[in-house]
Image: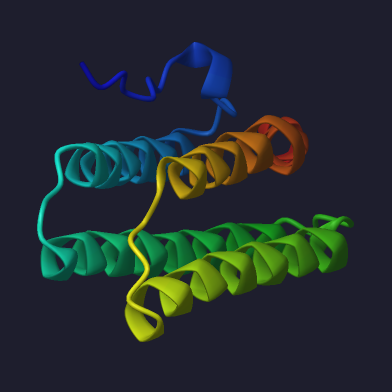
Length: 134
């Protein structure tokens, strides 16, 4: 049985619009994890991975807009982390697409750490700030 990543209050940054984005990303991550573990087709896995990346890019722009609107001083560092995260997942995607290497359990673990690690560190700091100024 595949154990899903569960969005709960531990992952909440206390800003509903960001939490809503995070719930969607967790849901897409779980769809990808199931697809890999159940041996779905490479085309389906590629489509889910692209959707996860696209939603993540949109979400990062959403956070950056909020940072700009509310004068978050940590914007340059947070934006840099966003860029590094997208580059790393795009590298994984290219390995999968260009080199015909399947997404592995190790890749899924990387993505889970990537998603939760960012939420639990940088996004928690952003959420605390936004809660004070919104």
